[in-house]
Amino acid sequence: MSSSSGPSRPAPVTHVGRVVRAERVTPNMHRVVLGGEGLAQFDAGRYTDHYLKLMFPRPGVDYPQPFDGAAARATLPREQWPVTRTYTVREWDPIRREITVDFVLHGDTGLAAQWAVHARPGDELQFGGPGGAYAPDPQAGWHLLAGDESALPAIAASLPYVPAGATGHALVEVADLADRQDIPGVTWLHRGSGPVGSALVPAVLALPFPADPAQVHAFVHGEATFVKELRRYLRVERALPRDRMSVSGYWRLGHDEDGWQASKRDWNAQIEAEQEPAFS
Image (cartoon, rainbow, N blue to C red; front, side, top):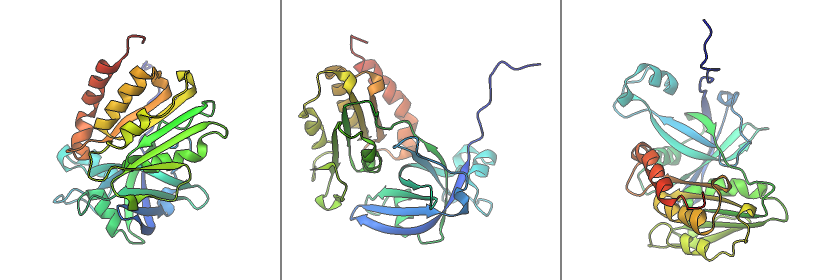
């Protein structure tokens, strides 16, 4: 009997990266470069917001060794699955076959960040991916890239692909001025002790947008609360079509990634219902 369900999806690939080097980039960002034979099937480059699903053993669970995150998800109950954390590919070098990943630090907390801080050459990390959906539209004449520290890797990876001759605004908000990096084209905004987005939102609202929304391509990511505010501004007040925006909350204050991912679909659905303008 033939099936009408169509072709099946290929099984997700789990890659194994070996730490090549690690370094502190700024006081609150740590960089890890992964390489090794475990990246033989890895490829990226179609998008500039490529991301990885990093897998970490869950404390207290006795996993078969060597650790295999994909096998653990296939054989163990959900509550024992490895912990997954999502991080953007800062750079993929297809010649050296090396992946650069930047980790925002939050003191001594954060499973992935603490792994990065203590990573040493030879350490291994399993991950799935890459996913991704955004790259600057080469036909757009006006580009907005805006976010907090968590969006900096994607913004930095995207800037070289903003087409020559186009207008580009790259706005990155940080808590500490010492976290600025030497990235041409970035305008750094300092929030200090203010809420996340308190410097970024008014800076975006002050930009002189072109009259034709079709000329705009926008990338806005970071803490979900300010992202919601900027999405409403772009979608309703600036009348940007949905296909001219990549706008999403990478994280939400007061939630770890597990809690945020569990509620993100409902959060996004609520925003869609509230913010769809009358012209759509």
